[in-house]
Image (cartoon, rainbow, N blue to C red; front, side):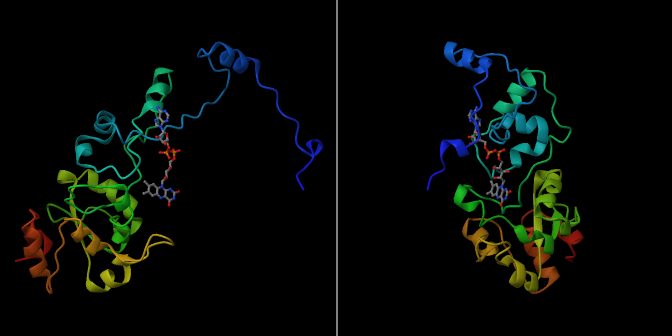
Length: 213
Ligand SMILES: Cc1cc2nc3c(=O)[nH]c(=O)nc-3n(C[C@H](O)[C@H](O)[C@H](O)COP(=O)(O)OP(=O)(O)OC[C@H]3O[C@@H](n4cnc5c(N)ncnc54)[C@H](O)[C@@H]3O)c2cc1C
């Protein structure tokens, strides 16, 4: 049975300021102490990305809503608001490369969530972070590396247990390396470290530092 009106909390009367604004259809100064600007981030604006993410920003693939172009940020700044000091951090994941296209349905299957069990090296063949901190941390570290590109290395056990797995409920049980290769990205395997280093060297990675001969 629906509740009677008497059991519902009393309705709050609309504030007079809002009623005037609505009647006149004009923007009115806010009388509120706090305003939430809910337009998301600025991932869809290459200029803001370059300004806050640094010179490698144009090497990033947008893995989120492209309609957020920083409107809330511009509005807030125009009103005298300050930004956080952490504007160069972001939430993201390592994704394979190269990709001719990166569409929404690929966002989940191509994310390399398992990288916390792998070794991540840059194009100089150097390890660049503590991978166990998590993929979403490693991806931020990689952005500052040469060409913002790296190579994710693992052995067969890690591939079997973590790459071909469901990293969290509803993420999908699939082979993320296979999906990467099917999307046109680089993937190599070899029986020895030397063999692997030689294959990866063809991608412009320093094979000697990586352990090759
Ligand atoms: C693939 C993927 C998986 C994720 N998985 C998880 C997860 O498992 N758990 C989790 O907690 N988070 C997850 N996230 C992150 C989560 O989705 C975001 O943190 C969250 O959506 C951010 O919310 P928001 O309201 O700030 O921005 P958004 O959800 O981006 O919403 C902003 C909205 O504002 C609109 N907009 C922009 N400009 C204007 C304008 N000028 N006028 C009107 N509208 C405008 C945009 O079109 C958009 O609809 C995931 C993100 C992605 C991309």
